[in-house]
Image (cartoon, one colour):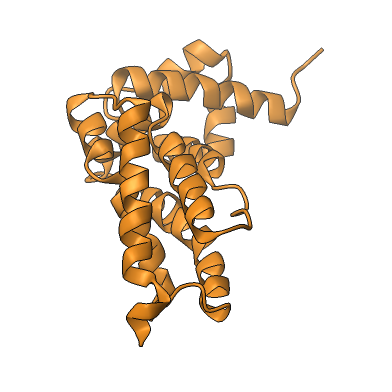
Length: 199
């Protein structure tokens, strides 16, 4: 039985992901992807338009998987800890790191990809946290003038230099290092955002 359109697309994307992660963007050809997926050149071009379009589709799929689940309710300290750990788990996923390295290498050729990664990664995670921060502000639990900036800064503190080290030097942080970064970020954020600071 012939594959459905969705199955053909999934096969092509799986093959392209393997090729791009193994060879990089520049060295991968559409022929490489076809040889691995068993698809046809016309199918690839009809579905994705170009090698850049194919790579963008892979990035889009990866970013969709990186979206934070709905931010839980609860005390700020517990929620921030849970959000920080979930964010770091996604950021440090081995395949996400490998794809990030490819994006860094290809961003000069396909500038929109770098912007897309940032928008759906850190910016997307921050957006998921903003509404929770606004709720805490309304309830008088924290004091922040700019919850959007506060969300971005919290995630940046949780990340610290761990992501940069993993991308540039292939240094995978331990779970203890990640937990320590997140714990420090929670403490620093709440110390700066406590209600007394507003009076």
